[in-house]
Structure formats: structure tokens, C-alpha cells
Image (cartoon, rainbow, N blue to C red):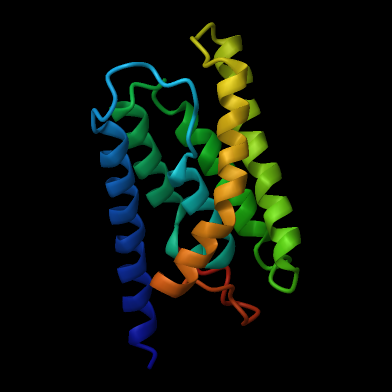
Length: 177
């Protein structure tokens, strides 16, 4: 039984990486030729926050950094900016996971919503300070609202499709990389 735990951890890390790459590929597909007037959710951010809270050992910091740095390069964002912000927020989320283990889903959702708002505001402030182009405020707020709205859906899909549930053991949530 002890041998299956590490292999499951590595399989789920691979699943996270593949899901992230699939989401990144979907973002790169040229489905629309005109600029959109609305912003959809950032599924990679929501997926990372869900998994970092529920099973932190499935999303180690090095994997989050690699996936989001690749996303920064491929989506032509400032290299490392979004990756660093999401990495910091996911680490805070990971460290809070043991405290949120017994909390209600509403409190978890509220906490994740706050983190999504922190990600968006931090990105906007840092990009503005560095004189980088920033997306319109309306689109940023729309994406944060869409992220918050899609969070329960990602939780349910992660729970039923991939078995990503909250850790119940005292040491289950803070596994080593």
C-alpha cells in the first residue's frame, strides 16, 4: 500500500500537467478572428487553486512554475509575471489547506475568490508599474467574476473525475515535492 501512494501522486502530477497543457492548447486555437468583448475564465488558475487547496501534493511549486511560465511564453504575456504571482498565491493556498480542511465549502469558495482577486489586482498593479500594457479594467473584472463562478464546477469535476478530495489526515495535505 505504501508503494501505491507515491505512484498515485506522480500520476496525478502528470494529470495536472496534461490538463494544463490541454487548456493552454485550447487557448491558442484560433477560434475567433475578431477581438472578444467578454473575458472567459482562466481555467488554469482555477484548476491550480482547487488542486492546491484540496491535494497540495498533486501541484508542487516547481510544476506550477513550469506550467505558468510556459503559458506566459506561449500567450505572449510578460515572461514570469503571471507565473510568479500564481506560484506565490498557490503556495499561500497550499499552506492554508490544513486550516481549510474542516471549513465549509462556502468558506473555501470565499477564500479562493479572494485569492483570484489578489492575482488579478497584483498582475494589473505590477504591469502598470513596469509600464507594460494592461487589459481593460472591465475585462479583468469580468474574468475574475467568471473565475469565481466556475470554481464550484472545477471542484465538482476534480472530485468526481480525478478523485481530488480534501485531505483528511493531519499530514496528508502538506506532502513534500
